[in-house]
Length: 324
Image 1 (cartoon, rainbow, N blue to C red):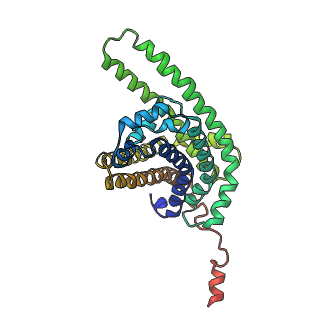
Image 2 (image 1 turned 180 degrees about the vertical axis):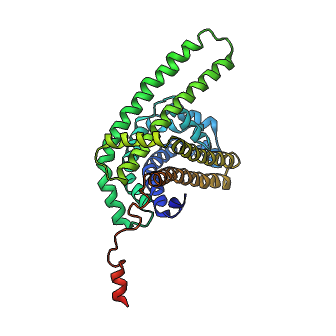
Image 3 (image 1 turned 90 degrees about the vertical axis):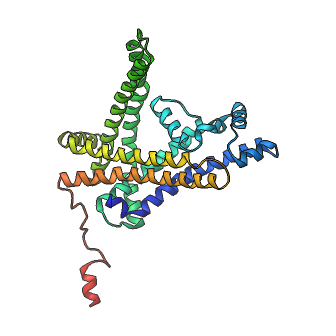
């Protein structure tokens, strides 16, 4: 946590990155809404509060980006909708998929610089940060290809096997709805464990690639698996703690969002808290990387990884001696 709190510029940078990716979509959707509302009475009711009848009317005739405008995007509904789409492997409109892909590419670019900054535990300035970004970008692109193959297997084949085949087989003769629900929850748990295991492995692969300057991503994955196997309790425990913090952030946002409905000032307050929740979720993501980096360095004697860098002008002792 200390490493994240000592790097506020990184949090601000990733928040700006998120805004830059989502702002064009927001402006495009705003234009669609303005064209549909015009000067109608619905425009007045929509401006003063949530008009579910009009939202349904808009959704019935919308296409592309417009189909995403529905009641589930309001407040905590957006988080729950995304979570539902994630665990149920629901497809999104092409424009959303494209924006998400661009966002992931940008994250792949900055990941190396972020982890390098956390590993050094000192300011690296813009040139040092973007230098690390450039060094690890293509390495992490190769790692992303492996990640895509693994997650494609999980979400296409494993998800279908668990929920379309195994679930139907288990509940084929079940007549109690609660039993079927509990079986489905258990399968969600199995699927979540598989996804979490892959996430932990790929996170530590990034950490080992940066800290040890690894060029082979397959080697980094193998090294990550070895580290997790030898430090299973610490690695899994740390992931659970970080995930619990993410859940707390979502819970706090849900409580605030439920009380920020209505119109006028309350809508603006809800929007402000929404942006704050995005920043909080980004902070938790950075906390994942920072804590995993700290754990790896402490367990494999890498705690001194350029934390005490070679003196360079004008910060070196020589410069201070000349100044005297």
